[in-house]
Structure formats: C-alpha cells, structure tokens
Picture (tube, rainbow over the protein chains, first blue to last red):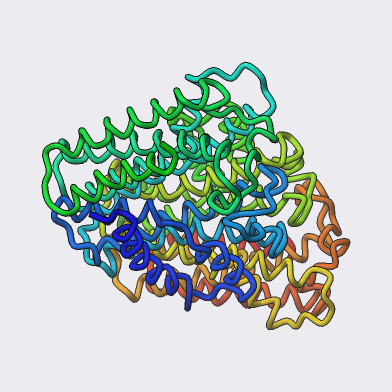
Length: 297
Length: 297
C-alpha cells in the first residue's frame, strides 16, 4: 500500500467535487473568488478522505457520501481563514501563499469564511437530497458535526488557544484539552460521520470515533513538532511562528523526544481500533495513521 | 388582534428556548458569555416567529418546530455580530448596548459569530432528532436555509453592501438586489421553512415564500426610513449612521414619500398571499405585515 499515492488519488476525487461545489449559487464574484482562493489552495483533504474511507470500510458507496465529505473541507478551510485574521493569529502566509485577508481584504475574508461554513451544511443536506443517503442518518451526522465544529469543539478550541497565547504556566492537560477541541474534534467527527452515514451499528461508530480521536491527537503533536524542526515549504507558514507568538506546544512542554513517543503511542491506539476489519480500506486507514507520524519520527 | 401583544408572547416562547439552547455543550465560559450577550439582547424574534406561525398555519405543532425556529435567531444574531466588526460596518452600538467586539474583543466576537452559526445547524437537526419532525422535511429546510444565509444570500448581500458603501451611482435595482440578499433572503427562508416543516404542498410553500419575500422588502425599506426619521432608542444605533457611512438607502434614492408608498405596496403583496387561509395564524401574519409599515407610515 503506497499511502501517499492512495491519499493523493482520493484527494483528487475530493478536489474535483470541491472545484464545482460553490458555483452557480449566486455568490458575488469577488466573494466567490475569495472562497475558492482558499478552498482550492491544495492540501491533503485529510478530513474528507477520512469520511469517505470510513464510509467505504463499512459498506457505503463513496459517491453518495461525497457531498458530506466535501463539506468537511469547507469547514476546515473557513477555520483557517478566520484563524489567520489580524484579530486572531495574524498570519500573512497560508500554504505558502498570502492568507485570505492579505490577498483580498479583512471584510471579504470574514465573509468568505462565513459563506464556506454556511454552504458546508448545505452540502451535508445534499448528501441526502442529491446523493440519496437516508435523511435520518444525514441529520444525525449533521448534529455530530455541528457539535464538533462549534463552540464546544473547534471554535471553542480556537478561543481557548487565544487565551493561552502569551500566558505562562499552561499545563500539558490544558494543552491536550485545547487541541482535542481545536483540531481533534473535526478529525474525530470526520471518522464518526463516515460510520454514521454508512448506517453502521454503535460498535463501529465507536471504533471510528476513537480511531479519529487518536489520529487527531497524533496529528496535532506532529504539527507542533514540525513547527520546531520543519521548513517553511513543508509547513506553509514560517517555522517557529508558534514559538514567536508565545504559543504552548508539545515540544516546549515535554521536549522533542517525548513528543515523538507520545505521537507514536496515539497512532498505535488508532490502529488497534481497526482490528475488527479487513480489506483495502482497513489497510489504508492503518497506513494513514502511521504516515502522519512518519512525517517526523 | 393586538399584533404587538401576540408578537411579544410568541417572542417570549422563543426567548425561553434561546436562553437554554447554548448551555451544556462544552463552550468555554467567555465564549459562551459572548454568544449569549448578543443572542439574549432582546429583539422581536421576528424570524423564529415567522417559522412558527407559518408552520402552525399549515397544521404543524409549534413545539416540534421550535429548535428550527430558534436556529434562525442564532443565524440572525451571528450576522449582526460580524456586520458590526471594525473591518465591516464598524458599529460600536447594537440595540442600545456596546456591540459584541466592544463588550468583549474582536477575536471573541468573530468566534462567537462562528459558534452561533455552527450551532444553528445543530438546532435544525434537533428539530428531527429531538422534536420528532420527519428527517427529510428538516433536511430540505436546511438546504433552503443554507442557500438563504450563505454566499448567494445574506453573506453575499453583506459583501455587495460593502462594495456599495462610498460608491456613487448605485441604482434602485442594484439596491433592491442587495437587500433581497442581505435581509430579504433570511426572512423569506423563515416563512418557506415553516411551510416545508409542516409538510405542506408546493402551492403553500410558494405562498409562504412570496409572503416572506414581500415582507422582507417592506422591512428593509422601513429600516432605511427609520435611519432618516427615527431616534436612536428605537433604532438601537445612531440615527443617520447609514448616511454618514455613504450607504445607499431608499429615501436617498427615491425620497421619503415614495419609499413609504413602496413599502405599503409590498405589504399588500404579502397579505394577498394569505388569501387561501383562515384562522388566528392568518390574522396574525396579516397584522404582522401591516405592523412593519405602521412603524413609519
């Protein structure tokens, strides 16, 4: 299994859907340009791929799930646009290009984020209205995703992260809780929603959720590590920008070696959850979890 | 029919639901405070009341529709918070109190808006998961609302409004199109979603939509008029603030008298759509449409 190849191929399927999903819906030209500037700026499309792969692992057709999978990328993209704003992390660069408010303007960036978040939920509805998935499954997944992306999840995590910035004495437990909300919740929800949309039972939904939770934590630790040891091209933002902003990170709190050990442990927890399954999707999910850590370990 | 009394009573039902709807969902304390600061700042709850009343007119139980109706107020509130931001309309006052970013800070205001918008869609799902409405109806309404609130609707209207500000030579047609997106789309969707959630047929959904469209236009014209002739207490923002910002308004383009005539005409169009119905809800919707214009005419 070549995980990079498989991830690339899946990412391109998502990309093709994303390229058309904002068109023909009456958005003003400049606003649409700003939304697509960030949505189509590349990236691995990890969250949609997790939705698709978990759905397929549990016997669901990928095409039906695609609108819902794609919606995760709209949510992820909007969060990056808003996080980069001057009032938030004030980042000028994102994926090696000017951040949205630098390329357009601050008002447009705020609205582009709002537009992406709103349309994300429209796409989720499309998974049933156009994709034919049972409406009750889709609504259950909408509820999971709204909780994961909202004030008790991703949005709340960013709020806590802002409170931590420049504050001394943030503990590892506090850092973990913040990351679980800020980045973990959406990755966890991606896996859980894939399972829900497939119509799987509670044991499978649990496995998907816990796999996602472990992958999410590993992903964040690796991101912190890359901020210390990576290069700007890989990271798409200046190396050391977290440190420069006084942000708490895993390496700063427990050191580089212990951070790598922690990440590897979470990857093992994730792959343990794949035990009951077999086939290509299982192998891919397993390889994907390891791939995240292989970036640095 | 005392329309103010009835609107007040309905508004209080909505208020009671809103007061609890953000609690117990894991939002960090300060973020929750910011969300509730704006959500529970009063207001007529016009959009939720329109959802509830159209649903009841067409035979649906109001309690089941409440979570969906309330979600409209979360969306309306988030849009006010983001519109007030320094990068947008830069308003220090909202409903007679400091605007959200003045009371808290800019980052918190952006995130409070994001959190409200996200949870709105969670509440919509609750209308089926907790309220027992058929999932397919709710999803259809989610799709309508996402289109109305997003880049082709409310968010797009705000983007166009920003482009108009300070620009000379905005025509009445351009102004109409902008308002139809910025404020009309959500009011229209409120009525349409009420009808959809009740399980009504296409003719009823059409009537609800067109009633909403006419009321929305009338509402905006009256808002423009109040900016010229009202007082700060009624308006909750400084009189003349639109003019000071170089915003195009109906009175500026066609004069005060013609603006009032136009508003009255749209109210007649709205009440015409109620022709097929009877009973208390019909009378209330009819009185509600007239009440909007009575504020100034």
